[in-house]
Image 1 (cartoon, rainbow, N blue to C red):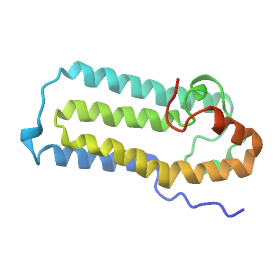
Image 2: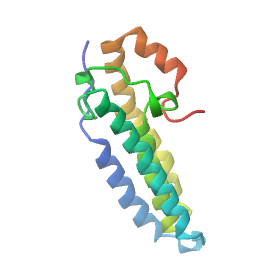
Image 3: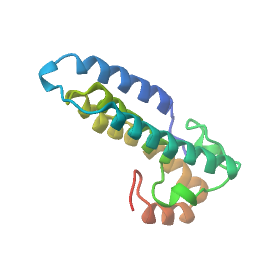
Image 4: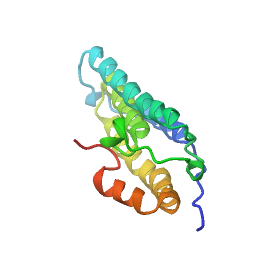
Length: 153
């Protein structure tokens, strides 16, 4: 099986989205809104907790957390936070971006939350899934049928 190339680490996508969101927030000040910064801190905390719980589950299973090398996964992690999302680290990153949107207090950067989901799904998650289906076969396919890519309860 040809392994898809994963060239851009997800953290780079996050940083690029943070920067673009910051820039676009200044373009249309008429789209500003007022909200307590407590909300952005709450969402940021939730995002970090979700991401780190995914990392902790991978570490406990002694499998790779390197998003550019899913072919080195030594076990399929389907417990803990992985019961609700197949990608808690990416969900956590999305929540960090949502916190940034709330902190910026401008509606325009919100479009980049959808952009992040689309870009990460296309260039990171789909290739990872192809690799993991090749590595874990029907066990991973069954997991994919039970648990959504992003989030579900």
